[in-house]
Image 1 (cartoon, helix red, strand yellow):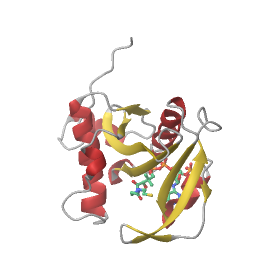
Image 2 (cartoon, helix red, strand yellow):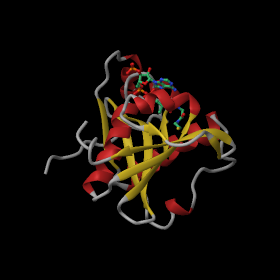
Image 3 (cartoon, helix red, strand yellow):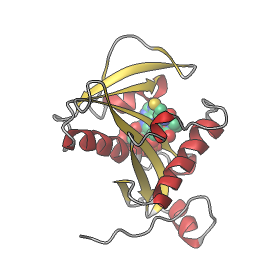
Image 4 (cartoon, protein in one colour):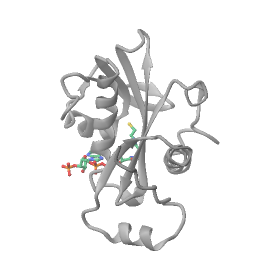
Length: 178
Ligand SMILES: CC(C)(COP(=O)(O)OP(=O)(O)OC[C@H]1O[C@@H](n2cnc3c(N)ncnc32)[C@H](O)[C@@H]1OP(=O)(O)O)[C@@H](O)C(=O)NCCC(=O)NCCS
């Protein structure tokens, strides 16, 4: 098995971090969280974006799915620095339908292209676990971003976490290897 290099924290000033922030074309990787320190970074990134920046959640964005062991976690890195996160989990009926949420890239790392591999790995992960469909509630500003990745809008926008969101879904088997 290939050794996995340790992830650099974006929350501690370092020469590694400075180098990545200055890079024009960083190496973008999305991977399933395997270590406690990776989970900590995943959760911290979500907190920075959804509690801090967007204030969608007060205090914490963690919920029962983060406690009951159902969720799978993905961490995105830019040249080895943790920079993005997304969560996924099976919903009823189990295994065939999956839900994705908490997609976040730290502001300093946006528009480098990290969002795409995060979403694609979530789709592939659900497909490899036998899923057929993945669903998500998408902030309206991000609908185009998801459509470019093969997702389709379902129904009309409706409130979710206090903001209008568009229900979207994707056939994960058809897009597993995009
Ligand atoms: C949405 C988000 C994850 C995208 O991450 P990112 O790493 O900046 O996205 P990428 O660089 O991979 O963008 C891929 C493409 O989508 C475009 N894009 C990204 N965000 C977009 C948006 N909000 N609206 C329209 N296009 C967008 C990019 O310009 C890029 O286009 P290109 O391929 O033509 O160059 C990031 O903006 C974010 O964390 N936002 C705050 C939290 C949030 O809204 N989460 C999603 C909840 S539904």
